[in-house]
Length: 408
Ligand code: SF4
Image 1: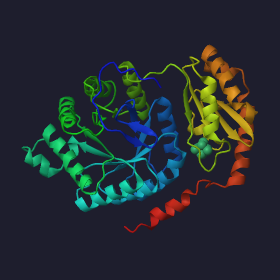
Image 2: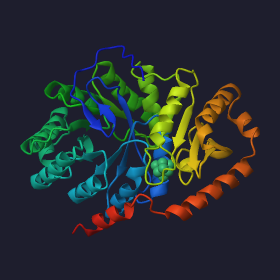
Image 3: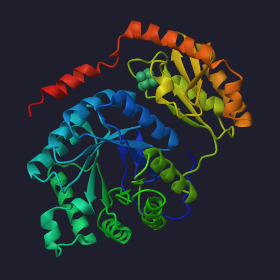
Image 4: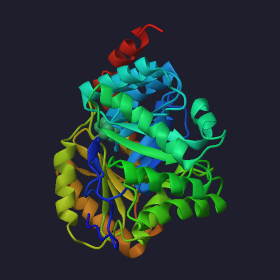
């Protein structure tokens, strides 16, 4: 993706959240957070796919209880974007989340306070090369720090909170870190980020916390995030809205496009990461699709999914997609089964239908096909796959057992 930043960005070190680079010369990335129970694997995955289709590069899920960690063990292998586990209070959930294979942890220094616990988590993250976001939040600042600064949340107190956490990480030689100093007050968060940018070169994650429902929430978040981005501060962003998280992802994406920090004019190809269920070589087919779409100006989201068991549902928000099943490609349009093609014609069919949709629209495409027949065919191949693979093709249950065996 071409990046056309219209103003200089502060120079930061680069870390990787899964395959998404954050900091350095990487494009500013968009994050959002699911609002489902993480233990609800199907519901959460469906939302993750919707968020990815709306522009999220990275998605955070809460890991607030053992069942959530078990959910992560099942979600991570099937997620199209890297997953960050949000940890509050219980450091053991951070260890569980690492077992589950998350791409990043978010720790709140205001509520995991024992140095031994913080260092243990940092050591484990270091061993696995998994970064941590130090997520300072004005509303849950350490009581002692508040008192030190006159019983107030000040930019200085927030920066000191981040620096204290960094010092613990330093003690164990861990530096795969990004930092946020969010507050619901826009002037407070702007000043806190400005001060933080002066004292560290770790990448920064921007956000106005609890911004509220749109339109006020959108305006507050944009005021804070855009002001900092225009000063060159910020490597990844999240809108925190009291709304469907898809709105957060869209807003983040649109803000970056409007600032010239991200550009989209061609097909936005999303693909599942492949897992034990995949019926095709997803990487190869996604690559072929990328090459086939090339520079064609088709502003559509197109999904390549490894299996018909979960593909059409997970990528239901994409304009168009194809899922493999039993040597056939099941084409779907906005989550509705539309046609079946031989496996070797999957990519050609995608291009053909993308051109049709781009010219005539989704409704015209759906009118052209027999959705009932396509659904019957997809259900048939889905049942055949389930019969052949069982319902735990990713061996997620083994990881769940490991998480369950961690003594409380
Ligand atoms: S192969 Fe199927 S279940 Fe696995 S990640 Fe792809 S779509 Fe999801």
